[in-house]
Image (cartoon, rainbow, N blue to C red):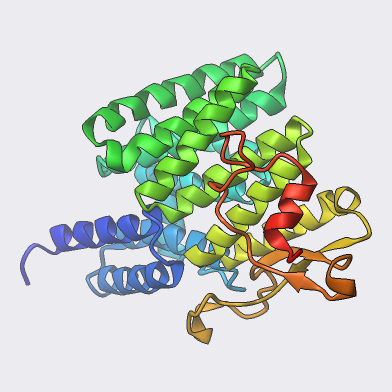
Length: 344
């Protein structure tokens, strides 16, 4: 009874709130499932189909070995409804970005851009999150594409950044960290590395202060890729460790596995024979049901086998706001990393 369309829209808003603001993903998973059931029971098939794409993104982040298939009716809606199509490709491009799948991301960004201008019934607040996520993707495309298409992607990224700046003026609490991160990524594209460092630090600090744990993790990860590109392996490793911890705290166990595999394969020679990366499936005190089956990406840490007369010691990553005294909030050498993560 009552206005079921408004009730369905309210449920979408709640679900988007959970996903975009870093609420534990298991909670988001449950709320999305409830919303899908609500819309299915009332035959609101367009809204249900859109929610199913959000559901699959959450399942991917959690690391669940499942994907919900759309019904034949849902597939027909996807083929004919630009609004649903936009939601579909937005989810696909964002997941590809988070899992650093460049080719898949590049394939889907074109499809997203082809339909985003002709959508209807997009909830107003989601425009801000589209601008943020798609802006980050544009800047990555700019760096990977070189001088040819790179400038075009960079200009698109700048437009997204300016859109986010307007949202920041309306609510610094909600959007400041996002604008800082887009600014850092643009500066990275422009080879203005000193300024980029400042804005990565601001993005991390702002996300932490405003309690967006998912975006704190993302800012740390993107900053880590930045330092990796500069060859500053110790700072990159420090930030990857912290990003992994925050993704884990968010409940993104599938992302944790992906990030652990990347770090393990790219830092082996840097870490050396006396150090190893260790990985556990600790669920940070969450109930066992929170972790998806076959997840291998719990917390990981540095283990130093050259200290305490061969006794291995390890500790989880700590926030990068305790520095080595140079004021940048980060560590400057592998020795500093060891001092933080191993008992002397």
